Image (tube, rainbow, N blue to C red; front, side, top):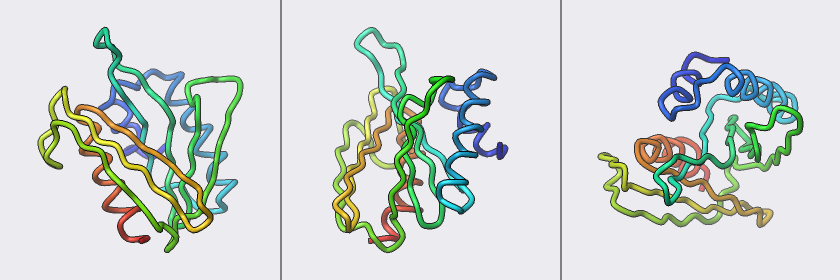
Length: 146
């Protein structure tokens, strides 16, 4: 696994060996499905009412595709969607709470919903410091493909 992926997982408190191994396995699947190298990853996250951190899907980006691996922490079964984004994003909207695109706090939330030419919808969401990471994903993979 790329060192930048390991550093990102550690930053969002997902640094156990089991998680890293599972993410590496899913990256291998995505590389095969896309027939391209996965060049970036993102993990949906949120905070529960009790203050604990929760995680949704693992997102994997290549030059042409975005993949969603639901339930990515499951070590037995994997569910991966692949859709094209290269010059194919026709819509996106954002929902922002307590965030200015630079300074994330524990209360910060950032969500983006997108659609491609086939009508496939996908939604990525972030909280706290992961908001800054989602801005990078939007800047690098969504906006250039509109």
